[in-house]
Length: 223
Image 1 (cartoon, helix red, strand yellow):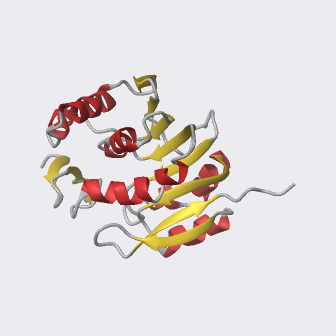
Image 2 (cartoon, one colour):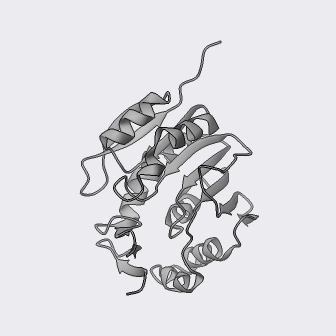
């Protein structure tokens, strides 16, 4: 059995199943719709009036979250997009991922995002700069403060270490005051650990077939 398997989800978009972890990168009920709901509607839209923002994505995966950020952000907004993945997908699977889009411009953007080398900072457009990092979040050192975190690793069931208090504390410290973290999950372990490191959390309507998701805010600290 191949480790990685491409699956067409219910909204026509693609996701990948990792047969080692027995997890899909996005919901089989709709990868596109899930990403738009969790990361765009409940995350990026909070910053729609900002001239420039820094985004950090935990779990690059198929590149879908980066692509949807690029094609849906305000045209003039400048985004620095940093994303980390310890186990990147093999290059051979990328061409098939681009075939899910009929629009040649979108297909070209996704191909660029997937093909750029790891650990280098690349301009996809004049206003969208991306750095893909192949590293372990536990040992990674941030070199800039972040406005918005897309927290999108595999589930707590598969990778509990990524939902730990230590990881959330590191992300909390990397955020600017009034920065946000958004994630598709709403399990008790995640909620408690986010609160324990200082986040103020909101439980929001989840994507598609999920009841809830979480949005966490780093409050402005008073002097």
